[in-house]
Length: 173
Picture (cartoon, rainbow, N blue to C red):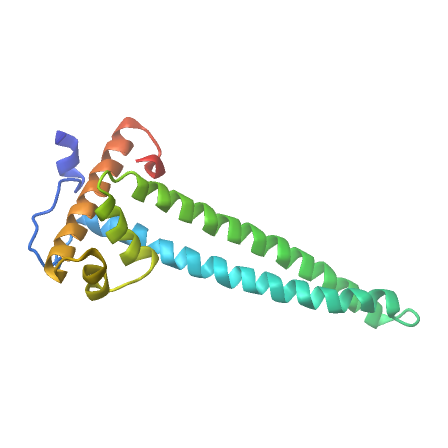
């Protein structure tokens, strides 16, 4: 371990077997991984909003061509369509950011050499499973699943610190 890691909380944690106490580096890594599910959820909601907006647009746009005469209603419909298009672009940008974040977190997990650790973190953070279903899926005890969780967080935290020291982006760590 490099001497600079100790001062920034990058040192591997003392493991208690229950995963109760996380080092600052582990907590930061866990929080970042926790963003995976939030990003996935947000991307799904944005896709639903986009679909609803497009559906509404398909109903409103024909009104523009079918409005009888000129008047304030026609202008209001045109403004509504413009706002819908703006909202659609914003939702698409936000959805892209969510997908980019998911890809970055996928890259973090791919950096782990141990496939079992990758699967454990994916089940925990991407799928949101608790320790019991994770331990059943991996055919290990819940206590061992928690120990492996700490080990995986340690590995990711150390990789992120090393990436920071070498100047590489953290997503590639």
